[in-house]
Image 1 (cartoon, rainbow, N blue to C red):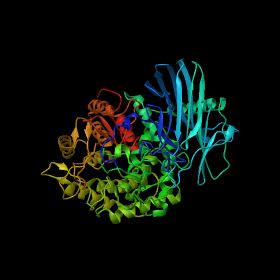
Image 2: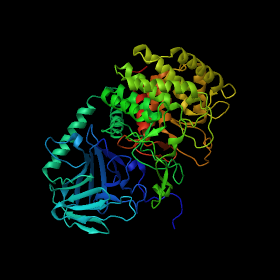
Image 3: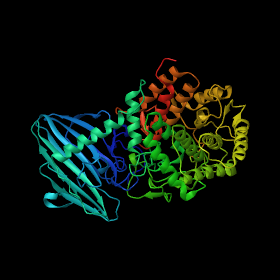
Image 4: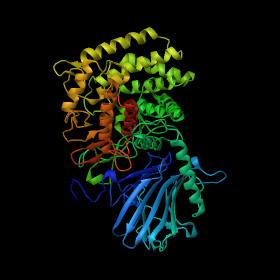
Length: 604
């Protein structure tokens, strides 16, 4: 039995690219292996999970078979990936994308989801190899079975996956499909994996139709990214971050998932391996601000209306997280049979943070609503009622201890950031009420807002530490307090905030990289990486303090944590230059976009 510890047979997280279609999201390695794909949606069970077990998890590879030098890039302004393989006998390029009827061709009946892989030999006589090993999480492993000219099918429950390819010498081995062919320069081949659930299967033909789908996909994304308003020095990275946020958005509901994966560890060999394929309320105001600043009012509106709809079952309360359909029954389970990325167990689905008390969620949702109204948005009567209910809940509960933004799984504390976001919830509702009549008990909200601010400034400030600490009566630092000026509770140049920033720099930072809190604060002695969002919050804080040039320099340094495609994980270890945590991580990308806009374009 293999023991715990790193396993170098796994590619680094930075080796992966993300492709998707506003429903599904796949990770493609630098070597052309799709090692993660959940169908039909981002939080559904994986068809390929080689990311979490390179032997048992399954994959879909198109590769050279032997030694090859690979190069990759996204088609400009899109999540269409091109990977070039240069081998001794020749070169070829693989183009990967996921097509969807959302962007479909008029008049055609298409599968629910379709992953398309296009191969073109560019030089010499390269050998192209295909190896597809689906591993849906069923007790008895289903196998690909031939369907003659229709290809090969894998059926499990109500789901059917159809695989087609014109690469020669295809055969079923061990329940999967392998194929290989030596191509002449200029020759093209295709592979298509389509999905259907509880409906008549659609058999998309190989050939010209897939080339049309490539063109429509590229056109759709380029028309979308052309709307980006950012014109500063980080244009390419901002564009990619917004594409990531859009890929994490459900085209059906408008919900934005926190990440594309589950259980990627926050430290190799550690147990902080959580399922982030759900929608966290704490992210709402940061994600919505990123969309709105960039000019994507529709996406912001769709997201906010989902927030209002998803939370109605719990009104006047809020759960910390929901799935893309608004469900909160996301019981956390340990998955047997998968060893975890580089043997970092356990692998989990679901997330028990759903049952925690996370008071900062109220401020996040209300700040998202305030941003929406400030840009001309309106609410219907039921949504207005829900917002009022959030305010009343804050008035009743703000003085309780909670689990905090980091969802610490131990005793609750009076977290400073949670209290500050309760203040932000009432402040935001009062601001909305000045534009759109909303409140029936304005005086109560004003009084509670004053009480919360007084409590934060009195009990959150620790004179001995010279900083706002993580919780009332505690001495540990917490990088989330860097957001206090952003929400408007205190000025960025207030001496207390300047001193807090200095303490965080001394104790939680290494260069531009910032940790959430010191090791052991959450009751877990294992280490973790720096939290990229916290690093970008420090950049935004400097920009709000008027030091925009310093903020831009720091942003540039932080972007070293991105891979060659500008994709970022949740965390980063600057000592080993290693990405950690789930990937791609929406909060990292949203925090970067917000910081880039705050830092501006000029030299000030």
